[in-house]
Picture 1: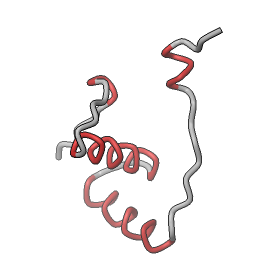
Picture 2: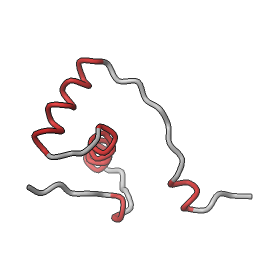
Picture 3: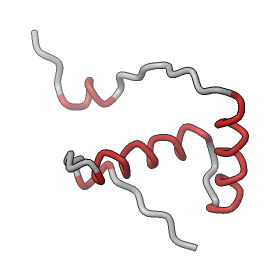
Length: 66
């Protein structure tokens, strides 16, 4: 049986990130007000996908304001 949209939303994968990039992410998180690395990385990936012309559902895109 195919998975529903809500079931697909719950699927996650693990990605290994080098320590030097984690340090940069931590610095940017503080500057931009992100609460978690996961939140930051998801927004960064969405932004890059939009830049490359991929489309993401509007409800998944979050915008940071200060």
